[in-house]
Length: 77
Image (tube, rainbow, N blue to C red; front, top):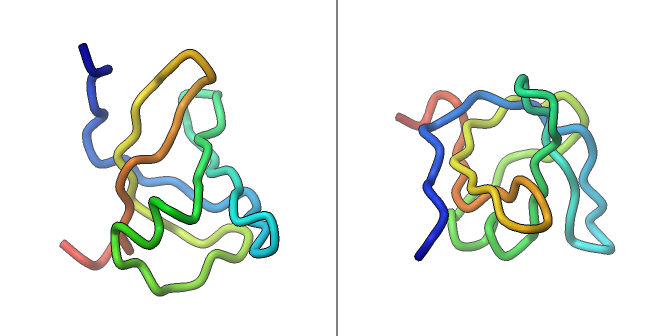
């Protein structure tokens, strides 16, 4: 059974390493959300990933923690 998907949630980029191709987003629930380049590519997101950039994400919680599975710019509704 797949873990439940969160509703769209406003977050900010904590950091993203373009060489390692992963980073974390700040989540108001306290835990950071892991973000991988594959999710970015699948979403077609081409915007900036600098610290404090606003993003809307959907995420799941698995054995390793919170993981972004979809993202978009806040004005892309």
